[in-house]
Amino acid sequence: MFFRRPRDWELKESQITPEKTYLNRRQILAAAGIGVGSIGASQLLPKMGHAQESDPSATLYPVANNPSFTAGEGRTMTPEDISTTYTNYYEFGSSKNIWRKAQNLPIRPWTLVLDGMVEQEQTLDIDALLAEAPLEERIYRHRCVEAWSMVVPWSGFPLAWLVNKARPLSSAKYLRIETFENKKVATGQKQTWYPWPYVEGVTIEEAANDLPFVVTGMYGKPLPKQNGAPLRLALPWKYGFKSIKGIVRISFTDQKPVSFWEEINASEYGFWANVNPEIPHKRWSQATERDIGTDKRIPTQIFNGYGEQVAHLYKDIKGSRLWS
Ligand code: MTE
Image (cartoon, rainbow, N blue to C red; front, side):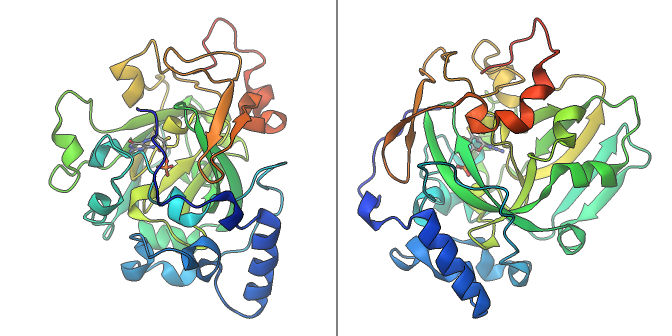
């Protein structure tokens, strides 16, 4: 993971739609029957490989906004053209500029396997899952361990809903989550020194919390491929590498999963990876972050500001590295 260099296509702060304006316009347009995707920064710059053109789930969006989740004090929504072109997806290369390459990923048919310690293994078709899931929009802050951040209106459903659907056995303690493998199009996967497939994990208690979100859309439209279509996680109180993209399998297990980055370098990337401004990463101070929408450096908050929802999950965990 590398530091980001500013790009000349980035918008100036004066061009950014503040959240309040975004929401007001959104409400007006929703009332008029026009999707949110037609507003804001997407008007300012050309289309950047958004998945909706060929995506059969396009008609599902926009979904109702859940007002419990907001950008937070002093934060503004990151313009769509920035958050969809500045992405981390090592399957397509180690630069941030992989959005064109990601368009080669076929996302239909796509299945999600729920297996391991469950009552019965299930293979779910993505469109059947989307038709059944309680889709809503949530605005979340995203904080990468490389010390950049963004604010995104994700669409999707609570991970807790999916856990319930999986019917795990009481002996299951963790979710081991796996990304697709497709070396032909995801040429980064030809780099054999990486431990493909990308894997992440959370505890059953974390997954049962309301905050973990299975993301299927963004800015009122289907999720672009470069942001993890058709399924990714958003774990906004943890460093961004935990928010795994292109999910094909969730296995319930009593063994703590070893994540992709942990396997590469366990001293730098741990299992918990909760955001903490006071615990520096070996290569990056975590005290502040650069908002990629405004280009401003701002103080980082413990649990990325979500402590009220999640801090209790960790109060009895002793002798374990809870941060980075
Ligand atoms: N998931 C997979 N499968 N492969 C990746 O390389 N990168 C992670 C995470 N999920 C990554 C992944 C990292 S380091 C971050 S910061 C976020 O995705 C970035 O999400 P974004 O590109 O949508 O901003």
